[in-house]
Amino acid sequence: MSGVFNKVVASITLRAVFGRRRALLFAIPPLILILVTLLLKAARPQGAPWPGRILGDFGFTVILPLTALIIGTSVLGAEIDDGSIVHLLATPVRRSSVIVTKFAVGALLTMAFVAVPELIAGLIASGTFGKLAIGLFVGALAGSVIYNALFVMLSVLTTRAIAVGLLYVLIWEAVLGNFVSGARLLSVGQYSLGVANGIAHDSALHAGLTLTTALIMGAIVTVLTLVFASRRLSEFSLKGDAV
Amino acid sequence: MSTIELRNVSRWYGNVVAVNDVTMTIGPGVTGLLGPNGAGKSTVLHLIAGFLAPSRGELTVEGAASWRNPGLYRTVGLVPERDSVYAFLTGEEFVVATARLHELADPAGAARRAIAIVDMAGAQDRKISTYSKGMRQRIKVAAALVHDPQVLLLDEPFNGMDPRQRLHMMDLLTKLGAEGRTILLSSHILEEVERLADTIQVIVSGRLAASGDFRAIRRLMTSRPHVFLVRTSDDRLLGSALIGRPAVAGVEVTNGGLQVRASDYGTFSRELAVLARDHGVRLREVLPEDESLESVFAYLVES
Image (cartoon, rainbow over all chains, first blue to last red; front, side, top):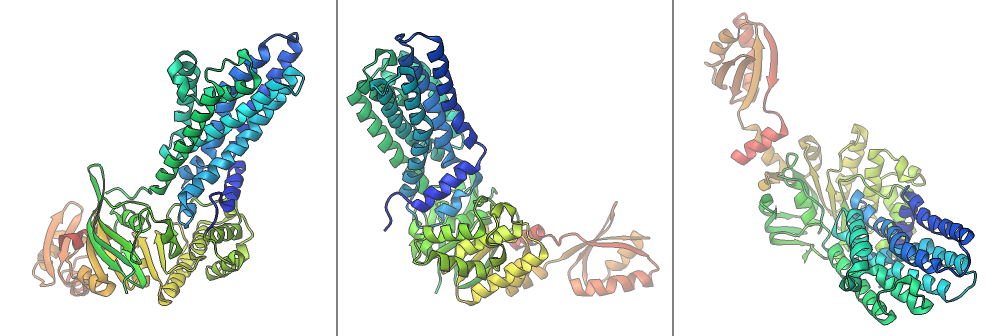
């Protein structure tokens, strides 16, 4: 019996993701983040509280969710859209294994394209390998994991995963998450900021949740979305011919 | 021994009934699932393949329910209709990957054998994106065969294939059926299935219209009245002559010509030209009007 991570599925997923033109989009948000950081570093005097705000607010509520959305919906949603997923599902591979593998690939790619650039931007902004850079890095790692679980689930639930994901990011997270305190409990951006602030202790990050709450809620959301996605994938249906 | 069994299976989408109370048993050999476009063939195939849940009824493949049962694919191979494959892989990579997903002991060896069966060894190193439609179908069959399944399900396998590729695929499926596998293929083209299948299941408007030996059903089909449109130099004169013949069940003079219902196809075909010559009428056109598969199926439903 193979483990829950399937190397063949991972390999096909990686080749599929990088075989599409959409893969070029992965690099754009982190490049913007680093460019903005470099510009601000050159323009602002040291000591001003911009690093936490830019890398926290902009990085965690725009760059991280958008990149995770592009990647998270690419690893599974594209295969469902074009129908090639049938070749994978017409094998005895457990559906939970497909979901976990796709999720893992998406999370690792998001870490590479967001968490690492956050670390680099943090280092550029603060000039040292200090708490801020490490906090941003770990917060982005956590966000990469939770966002991908959410977006992989959306890919199984709907063929409009990108649109639904965008609505979640732009309306729930960017608007409600910032102004309605209760909504923060269901905001992946706030979980990421909570983790980042738990290490960086920087009020400019505007974290609305404590480290403990962020970790517990992040773990619950990740597990629940992956379990639900596995159940839905095991009920994947092909549309028949209409009468 | 039967391998696929459907008992009173129905499938509906909201108010639309796609498959209506179908009961059928499919055993080893080649079985054709026939029906006009939109009749419910693909729905039946997807139900059998475990890619749709029956709304009602029982469905088993090799004794086990197919819905939510990934273990089914150890004994079942599926060739879906959609042309979407992992086009960025080479043919060999695709079949080897499928063998690995089946956790076969020797994926490379199994892939080599399956690729040889479909005669694709010469193109196995090319990316699938460069394949023709027929080659894609064959590599999909290789992937479906890589784990040596007892049951092979194919959804419209001849779509988009040229005549040579169709012949090759027919030979292959005939051979696989002769080996004792259960081969079920859906098609809306009667002639292909006629040459290939031992038995057929005819689906019309979601219902099982006919089931069993192909030749017996074919006889039923050919006993129906044939309708011809006949254009002549004098429609009324020929019409009056035709109506007196026993092989003709009815004649109607229309703007487009004579519409003749022949109760005996062979006798009518022989008599028409003689009758026209004897009455000095020139035949301009004789067109069969109900030879389409849809009309044949419609006849089956009505009978």
